[in-house]
Amino acid sequence: MQTTKIKEWQLLLLLACIQFSNILDFVIMMPLSPRLMDVFKITPAEFGFLVSSYAFSAGFSGILGAFFLDRFDRRIALNTCYAGLTLATLFCGVVHTYPLLMTARIMAGAFGGLTGAIVFALIGDLIPYENRGKATGVVMSAFSLASVIGVPVGLWLAELFNWNAPFYALFGFSAVILVFAHLYTPSVKGHLSSLAKHPLKTLETLFLNKNHLTAFALITMMMFGGFSVIPFIAPYLVANIGISNTELSYVYILGGGFTVFTARFIGSLADKFGKPPVFAIITLISILPILTITNLPKVPIYVTLTVTTCFFVFVSGRFTPALAMITASVHPLNRGSFMSMVSSIQQIASGLAASLSGVIIQKTADGQLAEFPTVGIVATVATILAIIVSRNLKIVTSE
Image 1: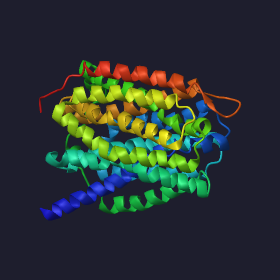
Image 2: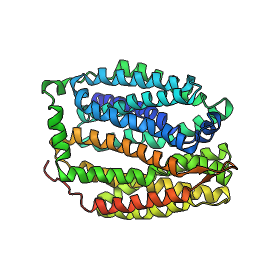
Image 3: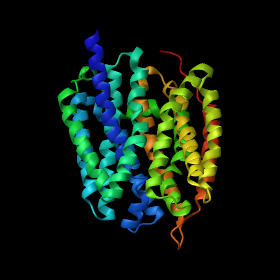
Image 4: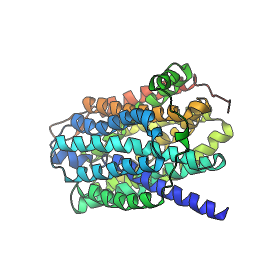
């Protein structure tokens, strides 16, 4: 029994490292935005497309993956996709033109989306149901760790060398983890014993169910309520508020650090008082930091850090009860393909949100960003719609 537990934690540590590098490959673009916009001489809209290209690619690859990933040994699928992500990360570091960087981000998104899907499929395949909640929490903590550790280190490397350095460092880390994945990921073939559904049948099951469509609408509104703002926080703080790149790292250290603890606390509140009411309250509170951060004038650094930390805590905190509700809104027999589609829609919606904001935001002659308050209004409307939509989501109790 002890040996099994040790192997279980070895697997979780490996999957968490893979997910850490996967998430960091995506989020590192946001704090690097001031440098990238300067180096490549691109507009906010072009930067928005750069961010959304990854999200769109990850979303569409996830949709395709729902139809073919189950036809392969999980070990082979994970190692192949993670190898592709590792090489795409290196490609991001060596390119020197905007079109090539866009191509590299599309490649990274395609492999990153598939890698994330396989990571959570392995948890479902190998971790007993009674331990699966904690296991999922361990792997999902990679997001907070990417903010607390990965982003500040990436910013420090960019400050010390150039914007390429974080991608080179992430490539080195991913290459090492890829070796461990090759050596220690177990072979999982149990799912191969049953034939996968025909793609049209899968689509029919997913999209002809009103409750599923409600869940898809909820995750879409949530992404517009957050990701319309998030990609432009760093360039706005640098250009309009006047904080330095060093101070920018504190934004992610504090924001990510607090969410490590507040996410668990919000989860406990949701278990105790119910997911829907806790989701509604946290989401309603999140409107205040959304409107504050998009209308922030030049203020002392401690005020800026207070606002950004509250933004991270409440905007990310909404996902804890929401994902619990979404996961429980589908019959267990269809949960795998359903969650894969939720993940894909989440990525595509984040890409659309970033693109929309990039079109709305304008760069003034003095280098500042205009129309960020308008983006705040868009995010607020989406947030209110998320609360309304969540009231129509039904929980499927049959297990």
